[in-house]
Length: 220
Image 1 (cartoon, one colour):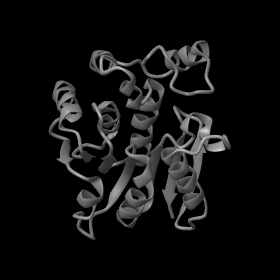
Image 2 (tube, helix red, strand yellow):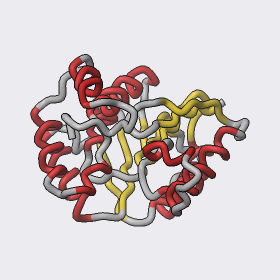
Image 3 (spheres, rainbow, N blue to C red):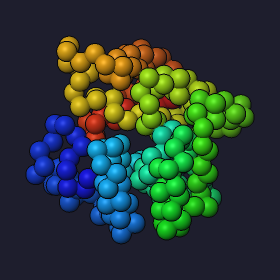
Image 4 (cartoon, one colour):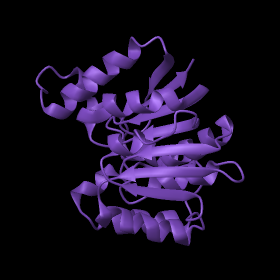
């Protein structure tokens, strides 16, 4: 994963250049990438190293005290976000897979982050509906099943503080968003989500050409 670009528009050589000019990954990240790769093709669900570096840096810039992740997989993105939290910061991770998140939990512990991260197994929409109304989120990262992107966004947005951030992964879907021949459930959901947030006056945002497309939304 560290050597192969997830960005469909990057050559392996240019991707290598990006990785070489980002903060170096450590042994925990390197071993997690290798273990996730052993899962086969599904390992593509893991974010790229340069995207992880961006998440850590942005978390620090925003001054995140409390973060939520929807879709944890084996834990790479949660490690990157948790490492950027302010002192005393915490993170809630939502996922449905005990198998994949058991890998994440091992690496959280190894990274010394297990006291900062709480895992909630179960449908994320149900988990998000239990957030107290007064609870404020500084940063949320959505990287889960695409047909539910809008539902996750709508559950999260009321809790995000003004100038807080929502990040949404895979919003270019390997370029299929502009391919008229692509008409599967996932690409339809992503197109609909992209159109929806672009017209939503509660936020300002951009689709960044990082990884497979990363939407950055700031709550007004």
